[in-house]
Image (cartoon, rainbow, N blue to C red; front, side, top):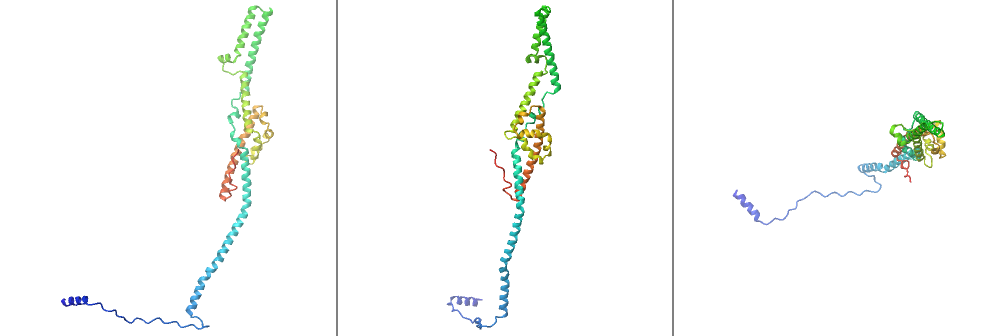
Length: 300
């Protein structure tokens, strides 16, 4: 062990030895020159064929892609050509529905209570009030006749005085302020004024609905959505509305009620037209027809 340690110390103290060269492998051989006209070897030919086979689909790929693009373009062109008439029809239908909604939108402003005239005095009430009025007038005339007879001497003075007093009392009972004290029934004059007031308010509302262009004759275009608008009993009202004189010709309650019935039927048709318009608008959006689905311009 001591000997080994001494040898290691000797090697450590000795100077470094020079590097030693050892023989390696032989150099690569130089390839022999290929003579002109000679055929390449089989492996090289196979490699070239493989490369050609690999490059062939790449060269043909643009032709295939071009053909598929042309086919898809032709299909799209045919689809566009077939959808063009449908788009034109949809646009025409939407324009027609939009025009109906624009011309008949005042139907929604109808006041049912005002046109229904539920507080209209009936004929029985009018007859009863007329009978009370006739009795009042007859009593006043009798009292006045007795008073005048006393002035001429046909009856005693005390009877004439009683007749005059009765005449004054009867006249006072006819005054509305005094009449409300002993009865709650309206007089014949009150009932007449009530009828005239309700009819006047209804005519004013009809004039507001009709406007300057007329309303119900334009709503007749919606008859496809509600066949009730084609009823012949509305023909006279439609002609008056077209001539812009409907409000002035409504002189009876029956005319106003008939006008109200037509407005109710027109309101039903308007809701159906509105539903059809929204459905067509949604369908146009789904198809991508922006010009068909365009919203109407705001009214000025």
